[in-house]
Length: 179
Image 1: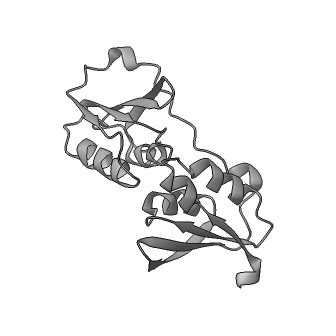
Image 2: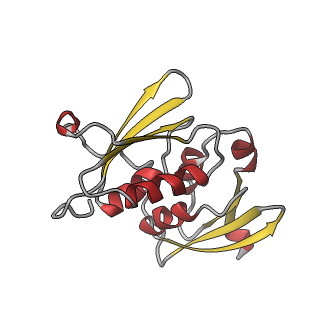
C-alpha cells in the first residue's frame, strides 16, 4: 500500500515554530482517488484525526523514535471530494459584544503543539457554561476551531501584529449543541 501513499513531512515546519495545518490540508486536497497520506510529525496530532475522519479518512499511528510520529491516513471507501478538504472556517460569532468579559486570560505563546490546544480545551471544559476565556497564541490555532465546534463552544479570533492571535472562547450553555 505504500506506493499509493503521498508522504508529507511537517517536522521542519513544526521545529521552526510554524503551523502545518494548511500544508496538510493542501496535501490532502491533492490526493488522487483511493490514495492515502503518510504524515511525519514531531508529536501525535490527535485533533487532526477527527478532522481527517470528517474528510473520509481513517488513520493508524506509530511513534518512530525521538518523539516523532508517522501517521497513515487512508480513505474510507471512496476518497473524499476535493471540495470537502479545506481549512475549517471560523464560527460566526457576530454577537460577541453581548458576551461577558473574559474571566481569565491564558498565555500559550512559545509552546509547541499540541500543548496549547490541550491546555485550551482543558481550561474551557473547567469553566461554567457561558463563561469566557481569552487565549493568546503565537500562531493561528487552526486545529482548535473544529474541536470547539464539535463541543458547541463559540469563539472569535483576532490577529495582532505578525505573530499574535487572541481567541475569545465562550463555553456552550445548556441548549447550545454542536455546530
